[in-house]
Image 1 (spheres, rainbow, N blue to C red):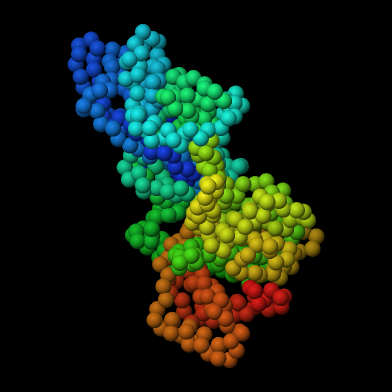
Image 2 (image 1 turned 90 degrees about the vertical axis):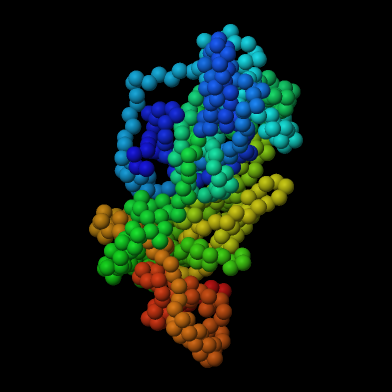
Amino acid sequence: MSWIPSLNDTPLHTLRPNSLVRYRCMIQDMYDPEFYLGSYEVVDTKTGKTNMKSGKYKDIAECASFQQINMESANNKTMDRQTLYGVPIPGESAWVKAGYTERTGVKVHPSTSYTPVRCKRSLEEDGSEVNSQNEAMETSESVKAATMETTEESSSSENKRTCVSDRPVENSPALPDLNFPLPEEKGVSCLIKVYDDIDAFCVNDLVEFVGVLSVDPSLAQFEAEDHGSQGRVCTDGFQVSAEEKNAHAPPPSLVPRLHAVFGTKLTHINPLLAPSTAQEDGFKEVLSRLQGEITALRQQIMATLEHILFGDKLAAEYFLCHLLSSVYARADVMPLGKFCLNLTCCPTTPEYSALLHRFLASIVTKSHILPITIENMNKVRMCPQKDYTANRLLSGVLQLGADTSLLLDETVLQAGQLDANGVKNMTALGNLINWQKVEYDFSYHRQEFLSDVAVLVLSEAKSLLPSDCLLPLAASIPAGVSLQDYFSRLDNLMSADFVNKFRVYLTTAKMLDYSMSGDIQTAIQDDFVNIRKEDPKNMTIDDFHKLLNLVRFLSISHLQTCPTQNLWTQAKSMEAQRKQRLPQTSANAN
């Protein structure tokens, strides 16, 4: 795999068309199924001989100037393929990108001997003409025969595609919007054609595809089109909006096509950890090595976290639990394993949240910071929304891949008025925190998509947003020292070797198969019953659930798959200390 060039870190112009490439992405949207001729008969117009050709893994039919496709042949076979729209993984850290680049075994350079020759026909555009001077004298019948897309797609899509915008064509954007969930994201988006197991992939899946690269310029040309009334594009007897053409057939130089040979869902994207599951032999070897040095490693991790939290040891423990949180199961609608941490009494300056996010991005694989301001809440699109004019899903900030760290900075919030969109966005953030779900807006209905996003909220007082754990910082910020200088001292704590171990440790701990033995279950249940007997107010059912969640995080933070009595005692002690810091009005609710 390492010897296959990657679209993620290789310039597109250096890759040879129709060659095998890799692409690591998040599936942002899924288009309608596409019908094509999987095999078709070609007739030699000079000799009359026929032969069969395959249309699989191709956008362009192979047909020379002296050949003609026999569209009426009984040997032709119509097949279907699924088109996915892939974008670079949102929030992917710079060290992850660099790690995958270093793992690439082959470096591609532009070829000086290759000259593309256009003597082919489109597999997809009905009635498209051949873009070659050698075929200028070909009859209109042979041009029509060059199509590889069947009329079934046209008829099945006709009813849906009549709902188009009245917007004039000349007002359409010259270049298509790449539709990245995070506006500052950079990278290559791609149209991925899937042939086998077309139902195996879903929106928001993180996948690495291996397939055939297709970048023929004619894919973005629509020669057999005329503009109908009200700015609609008329093709094959039915009307398609210009916006849909721009979205579904962008220039291949901007959005290449990839005909997938196979795709692998990614359970994690840490380039430092090769095993993808806990069942692989390589994972056991990595785990055994980390367990041998966990005591010293955890002490160093805690010292680092204490530094960024201004010496607060209790906050450092909770922060580590937050870093290790992930949704491992769902009990009905309740996500298990989430741990939204709300740190209050934070420095009221955007500099602190920016420095904290920079630290997060250096150790986690995916992260994003979102300032909670009135302007952002009123203007930013949080939830994806269906655009029926362009027939695509407009991305939103909350369309994030699994295991993403989302930092919400509420310290920058000023007095102001939320409009209807702002209230909707705040509700969407609350639903993400509470239920790990994001509602996608399809105009006529809303559909919930499951998420797995670790949310960290920084605020001056208790946040407007819900949380699983409210913790005021007991910070002792050094006087006369700027935050920039204070965070620069991390360089002394974080050597390159330690940082790499920290990164591997976080991914490995999340992959552990955690469970409770019968003895510890009995001990914890007896302890719960005894505390309830003494004073039921000291241990509610909600408190007990939080303790079970906390002891799970403490166990995997020590790379243990089963808790011990000492860890249960530590969890109770941490919760007692945390509640002592809370105001009386907040202690009951958190």
